[in-house]
Image (cartoon, rainbow, N blue to C red):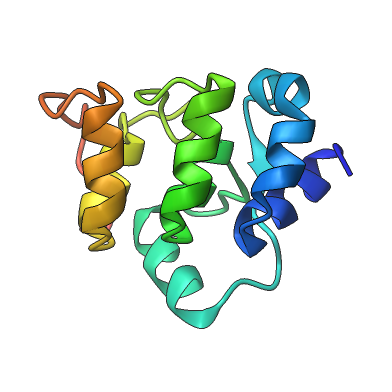
Amino acid sequence: SSSPTGIAKAIVRGDVAAISENAAEVRARAIVPIPEHLPEDVRVGLETYLLDGERSITPLGLAVAAGRPEMVRSLIEVGVDVDALLHPQDPIGRTPLMLAAGMDHPDVVAILLAAGADPGVELRAEIPGD
């Protein structure tokens, strides 16, 4: 399904075909809801990077958090911005690359860098509780 929730679930389960088939919709979708049922390690890792009450994230941010290199590659292929903040109104400037490094997904870090992600971006403020 190309609904925001459908896209989010496809990303978490690694359904690259669903992303390719709905490329225009995925590209147009600035944020998707964070699915309720995430693998424990993903949920815990992601919570470290989310602001209080944050319940949505960019499709690329979700793929990075889920540690799905093939999905990250697929999203880059459909044209998402590798340096787009994890949330359009992000007050502190978190990027997918920061998330990949922080959640210890070196394979995802390599894909993002190869796609032109900027390693020089700095946070505009501290992550609360960091």
